[in-house]
Image 1 (cartoon, rainbow, N blue to C red):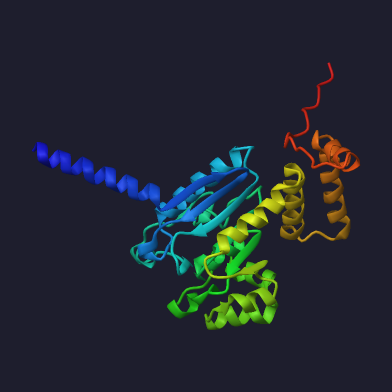
Image 2 (image 1 turned 60 degrees about the horizontal axis):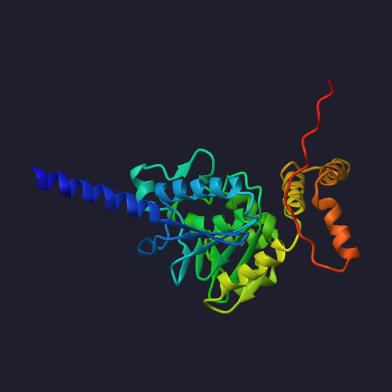
Length: 284
């Protein structure tokens, strides 16, 4: 009986450990790195992956010292092969209530996210990339949504985000044929921001993140918020100008608003506080 209990506890501990390891989370200065880590399953997204990713995204957004996020893979040939089809076939939920598929594609991202791709980003893997603001990819990478080959559709954002990021007819070809596009061709269409050699995607993504981190963090987040809201709500020019001016008014009340021009005048690098505008004093 004692042996049975010991074995049972060891099994539970290993299950917990394996679940905790399916997504790795690391901080490097102002940058957070999320690593998909189910290499034996080619990083197929399970319920555990979605739960862990959402948990770490919550931590990332709650940490004011973190300004940019990078998503990468521990697999040397695959970024993410999509959904765990065994879980899908068995009816096991793989999405979260807040973040949706991978705990990410519907997550209300407030900070910039970069996908660092060094291999195949297919189906849900491609949709993870589409949920990010920027993509760095190596020349051995490829992107595709092969769902129709399995009597499915790319419902985790691919159906509307792919036509936003690629020319319409190219996006339709990917969606209807299920065939992937190589990274160099995706780069030529503007789908990929930076193209690099194999094994260099994370290094290049960190360089891109450093270029963002050099800027005022609240201004970066507000610029992203404006772009996202204007696009998502399909604002006309008048509404878009109002939203942009609203952002400027908010920034004008932050400590960093004066630091930028002051550093330029003094010919030095700015020292950003990242502090929001102080709360308005209530009138008694």
